[in-house]
Image 1: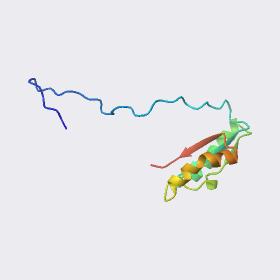
Image 2 (image 1 turned 120 degrees about the vertical axis):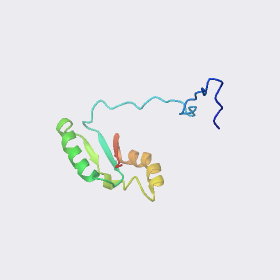
Image 3 (image 1 turned 180 degrees about the vertical axis):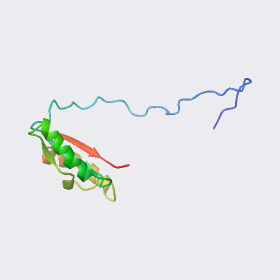
Image 4 (image 1 turned 90 degrees about the vertical axis):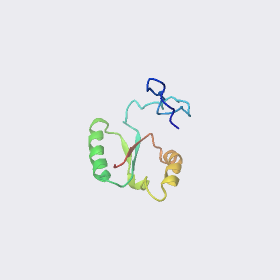
Length: 108
């Protein structure tokens, strides 16, 4: 509910983002290199992720020749009917597959 203006026609100002509900947590430790690491590819099956991941693999292997990729085909679409279940299963799947890092792409 909006407050009324004071005598000068001015309104009180409020912060539009509201009160922070979650505490800030430190970011995960970053990898020093991708050499010898396994990188999962996640995609929502929109736009041209298949082409982008092919090009990205080529470029990353120029700098990190020992990087291993697990294709987006392994995981299925991250957007759709079973999106919630798929995303919830990722930590376990990553552990099973030895994933060190992930690239998640989406189309807008």
